[in-house]
Length: 211
Image (cartoon, rainbow, N blue to C red; front, side, top):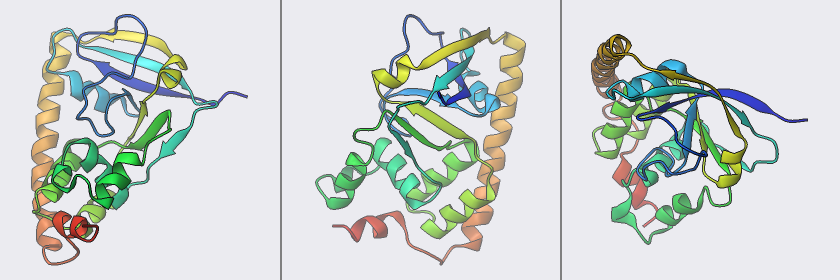
């Protein structure tokens, strides 16, 4: 019996041809075809682009080798690797661990770094907040999940159900919404930073344990 899930994909200029795992390299989980459980999240990612389209897709997970990452420090450090935040530790055991973590998988599943969470991750990577602050922020936020098809096999098992162009008025509203969410995220991150200022370890301290 097949196991399918309905997901959303936002495209800046629309999809041409067959689906392929060819997003830009510096994404949460590297190159892939990105889909999410939350329609609103997919829309806010493409609201700056006049030719943007929203796709509803059905992904068949049958026979796929799936890495399901849970919200926590491994999730954050895996994103750190794929977003190029670990280059200073290249050649180390910690770099090797996260570089190899997704090897052999057809799909990676993990929480989306939405506008609020992206602020927290950026502050964690830059040494402004500790892992305790980051993990507490994860538990406080209701983050949708993203499914990233990283192989041709996974992409072949995705079927487009619906395609919708995003009109100018809708894009303007989404831009306002996205900006409001990001500003809210900055304020919210400041509160977390103050609460956990001296609790936990910083990103460079965690990495140093492996060096």
